[in-house]
Length: 449
Image (cartoon, rainbow, N blue to C red; front, side, top):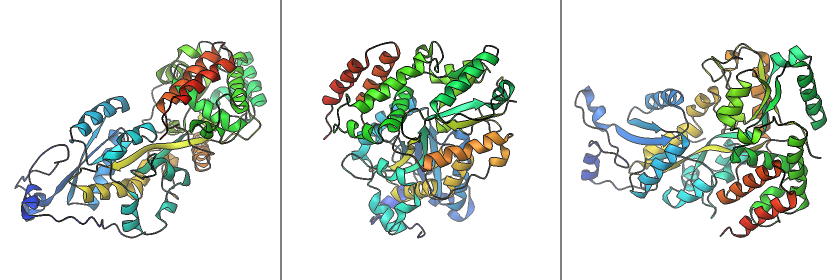
């Protein structure tokens, strides 16, 4: 890969250069002239603002320190908020032309919402990295950072996928389970053993109250029955009443009638209910979640301080329920974009490059914040896990994400919502054909231009 030397053709007047020593906010984030550091280095330091929900503050502290060490002429001003807060703040700031220079993006609806305000990336990557740079990213990630018109307006930071099962190996050992289930029949048998010998422990905890998680399950299951058809239906090329989705909804319904999902699942959220009240409290042997949970048992992670902090735990892929093998569905969890109106595009590019293809990728991988978007990154913190099952689980997750069958997140929020509501209705007993027709009505009203 070529050394980054961003080829923006900017003609800066003397007055513009002088402005770089003036403190400001939003897209005018130049560093103040403190006059306290000899040699004039601080006077010429440029500030680039970066907003996102990932990296976390701890992750960002390490990544930014490494970036600033490698780029002493650039200071990073990072603000992090939870996704809901972040999106609210970003919407106001971008509307007022006061957005950050580099910003976190969620692929799909959010990316398309802001596409016109984001710098096209592909030409910059071609200029700075040369031909074939796409091969340095996990294959599934590149198309997902393009807007609906095909313009690439972001680069992937990491990927996450579904559907995975956290399991308590200590509980499995106590009840005599020695083999992880890979088929639906094996999963049912495991659940039966836990009910019989587990002293009241719930086999599986699932937060069916969350539409996002229900839809993750739908996309995962549908790819077991008819690989790829869910994406055809998403684009209006296949009816939601197709037999593939009848089979998917039937399988979903059976998860409730066969008592795989715990009683009351429709009233529980994934976080904190199913996770904290059931799995982390030791009241459930398994917990359905995404690959982002793979690092939960690292020192200082979520598992620490819970009732199961000393239990051996691991993670496995959702068992095969349909006629085709179970495979993960994965999407770019966090993408990074350059604000089209940024006054610091060159500095923003350097930070973008650092986070997506530079040392930032290794830092994020070692925190196990999703799976790396860069090909060939190996996690170097596996020795920090206490148990073999936890280390093995990381390999299971990363291999599954690298070989994902398709994307996890659908492009149209209204469609996601309709599928989630239909799934909850079916789980509560609604006729499957009627529920699928409800999805079709919403799909028919989507403007896909």
